[in-house]
Amino acid sequence: MTAATNRRLAEILAALPTTRVLVVGDLILDRYADGKANRVSPEAPVLVFEAGEERYLLGGACNVAANLRELGASASVLGVIGDDEGGRTLTQLLHDADIDTQALVKDRTRPTTRKTRYVAKTMQVLRVDEESRAPVGGDAERAMLAILEQRPFPWKSVLLSDYGKGVLTPRVIQAAIAAARSQGGVTVVDPKGKDYSIYKGVDLLTPNREEAEAATGVSIRSTADMHAAARRLREITGIQTAVITLGKDGIFFETPDGSHRIIPTEARAVFDVTGAGDTVVACLTFCRACGVPLEESLRLANHAAGITVGKVGTWAPSRREILSRLGDKAPGAEGKILTQEQAAEVASRLRAEGRRLVFTNGCFDILHAGHCDYLQKARAYGDALMVGVNTDASVQRQQKGPGRPFNTLQDRAAVLAALQAVDYVVAFDDDTPKDLIEAVTPHVLAKGEDWRDKGVVGREWVEQHGGQVVLVPLVAGRSTTNVVQKILQTGQ
Image (cartoon, rainbow, N blue to C red; front, top):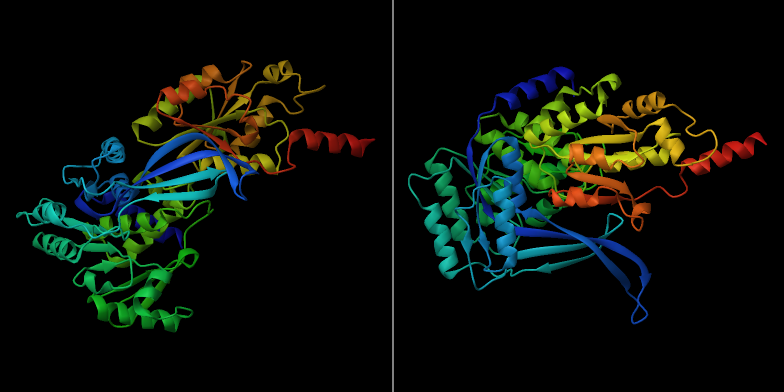
């Protein structure tokens, strides 16, 4: 994509006003249990999972709403939760994300949908789902319909997020479409299942390749197949323009006159595709609700998804992140190196902007591929990565070996600052980064997985302030010690 096109997209995004969007769909509480799975049970041929920390995130339609909120929309959720601890946790997470919960419906006959992922070294070992997939009915459905049948309708547009958990019944879908039409807004749906006739009357759908194949019966292997699937989607739902997301191949769309285009993917690095579809449908809905033409809306959604897949787990990219990506301006290395006072100021500014700061530290004496991989993975947990670097005196006190550090602090900081994954570099002279961590109070404290049993300095402070500690997998066989030994052996 040309720089001129990116500038145009940035201008469009920067000028978008806020708009009220109601997300209707399946509300999911995502629970992540981090731990180790290094041995097989003597009782049965299964892995033994040693549980560590756990964390809760917004999932399903809640993550869609979080994406809308980060883009600048006023987001509300309409869905069903249970009268249980999961429902209370989910409600609190929504409040914390500044998402309106007045339209939540509590159903004492069904549990809050919860997905628990057991993760070892960033790999899922097992997922356990607690849910009811039965269609919502009775008092719960009537309560949802009462909200959708308000006139005047309090929201401009409606986004239907269907995860197949029973909330989007045909009556709820049609009431949502009528509600958006009463305001002259749009209705966009992220669909599920094979029967798309239930979505008849919506303005846009965003099925992925596999979903489009299931709904149309067309096996999509070529451009001709995409045309056939698009034609069938229009016949089933009455939509004017068909959109099919293609993962790494981008987004396909076709207008009623048969003209089409494939917008190539904008991902620079892919760590986790979880939540990318939520980001696409949220950005597309927000842009269309604000009157942005379809192609520009899809291009912006593509850029937003490119940010999401570069993160670990679900992610809601902010408008500022997307604008920064479109500008493609990385700060100069000299502007990345900070004093501790400047680092605290930067951390304060990032918190005020609602951006997540990741902090890690080390000597980084001889930078190698393992370092680069580690820093890139750590950066994926937030919006900015700050690296604390031991001063020369601090390295010497650690007795890492004669002549250490081989490279001066100035050189080590300059090399780190030249890496795209690193946003800020700050030196510390103490034996540990404890004081520096307390000064910046990061949202995420990252260390290599080899620190699992050593005790991560700063863990207690970060967790007391609502942050998390992550242990990043390391590349096997890559270490400064190995590099030094190889150099010494070669010189003998």
